[in-house]
Length: 124
Image 1 (spheres, rainbow, N blue to C red):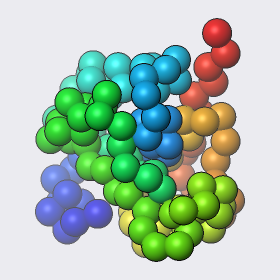
Image 2: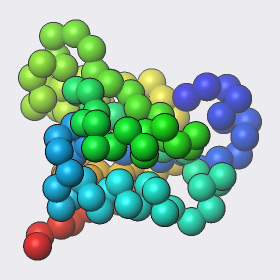
Image 3: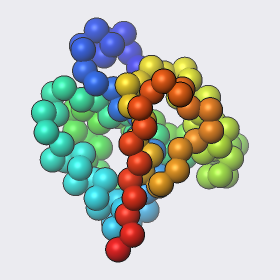
């Protein structure tokens, strides 16, 4: 997270963005609509983490000024499980965030235990 963002006083949310790497489906629809219609968008900044590029269905969401896409790189990004269990936790430790949003009913290992977690449970 940039120093300017820390000084802005915004609530910083780290989001597991893996559902946004595939075509629109139930979970990705819910996540994208929450991002699009989130109340008080000027108070929140979302860093969306994924091992792959976003799917074009979500281009509009990812152009929003309070949403930043952070894509995995290197060999671990080619293995989604390895990226989620090893690389993502390392990235999250390097960045300060106020809330972690687990969009896939799970959280990566090693999250800061003092940071609140929100999980998306979707079963329709």
